[in-house]
Amino acid sequence: MQAITFAAPGGPDIMRLQPLRLGAPGPGEALIRHEAIGVNFIDIYHRTGFYPVALPGGLGLEAAGVVEAVGAGVEKISEGMRVAYVADKPGTYATHNLVKADRLVPLPDWLDSATAAAVLLQGLTAEYLITSSFEVMPWHTILLHAAAGGVGLLLTQWAAHHGATVIGTAGGETKTRLALHYGCAHAIDYQSEDFAERAREITGGLGVDVVYDSVGKTTFEGSLQCLKPRGTLVSFGQSSGAIPPLDVARLGALGSLTLTRPSLPHYIATPQELGRRAAHLFLMLKSGAVLLDQMTRFALADAAKAHEALEGRQTAGKVILMP
Image (cartoon, rainbow, N blue to C red; front, side, top):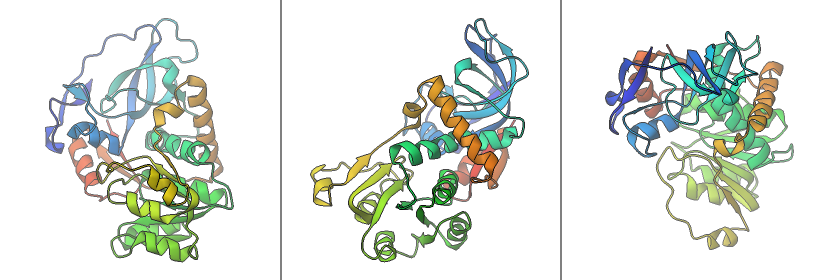
């Protein structure tokens, strides 16, 4: 067994592939042999210390694989089952992991492990964003930042499938073309255009119903300016840095706006809700309404290269590690 570990916050070079010692699964636990591991931007936050974690420690919150053993009291999960999971603490950059059995999602036969590891965390994120943080309807116009990213490509397809008009922002011609290909009605290149001004033009000066913003510091003010009166800003990430403090009175002055800061763990807090949202995600995948065919693969030992590519915005779609 091996795992990527790090002892102190820093750059990609601090990650080391080390031997991993895991005991037998305890009560309510299962031992998972990973077949594929998802890489997410939050992993970079953990590595750099932006979101502090216990050190020395591991990285990664998402993986798929095969159950090798189960502990006492586990009933619905058995040896040999193919499963995926979103971890409650970092540690999936590894060949194996011990996981609470009630956090495992059994995989249907038609879904391979690489796709499951690539889609679960970001797919569940897209699911709650579009159904719960703001319930997207066919008559809505939405603005989605990072539309060519992992969550962006999933959310674009999902919203377009519901009949909503999606305005996507992305950096550069290649990524804006990708956003259009996956369902954006309009794509704004934020490198050469003022996205807030352009969104107002597209909507005839009305503004959009909702902005989904995972970029943070550099887009937050413009995101507010895009909204129509009583619009909603869903801030679910900050890849460009922390958002400055906000005088909440401005939300009223800009048109009785709503601001929410959701986080996935609060939307899959119980096994029942996790199962319901995963079933919805799998339904969308199986129907073809949502496709996942943009993946960049790295070996587990090359996790540092994966982080460099993700931080350098050199990837489209999802990055995965293969043990």
